[in-house]
Image (cartoon, rainbow, N blue to C red; front, side, top):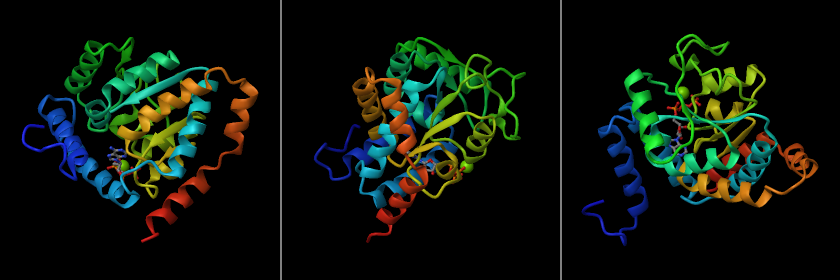
Length: 244
Ligand code: ATP
Ligand code: MG
């Protein structure tokens, strides 16, 4: 960021705006992504711009779910690619999971731009949806998926998902882990685990947690998952927002 000093009280928030606008300029992020980011900012302000206990709990469970998964897939949209490309790549490597580009405002050009961007930064496998494989239960552009990606996955990690698609994935029997600053969104309420935190804070913590749990037994991991209630976590997040 050229003209804002690191000492500026809103430095971090302004830096993220820069990353998102740079994403739009390089063709990675959709212009609609700016609006989604703005809504996220408002919730982040209410949450205190820090990872709260309810998010830490969801991160712990998500790590266990991802380690138990037979075929996890990491979904990537334009905002996530602009904000946390290296963390998404690291997550894919750690889980030996493919990344799959999945956009709400679809365009082949943007899918390919993101695919190339991630591969250039060191991603091992980046899939883009094919036009003949569709998710059931969904009409929006995001119904198209890749056979070796989301279509086959048992657990899908989707930072910044849309509610419709989250619901469709659940109906197909998949577990969905989302990161969403809004605990009231349809995505938040329909996910198996919702990390109510900024994706830029959540991803490094999730990666650390996966490393820490990597040697845990399946039984230990299953216990973590079965003790978890996403409903309770969302309720706690809402109470936290209403605290003021
Ligand atoms: P839904 O479709 O789930 O009901 P929505 O339509 O209200 O949600 P969208 O516009 O689809 O919302 O997506 C934007 C969502 O992403 C918002 O809930 C916003 O809080 C969240 N969001 C935006 N930026 C971030 C971020 N950096 N980290 C985490 N969440 C974010
Ligand atoms: Mg939506």
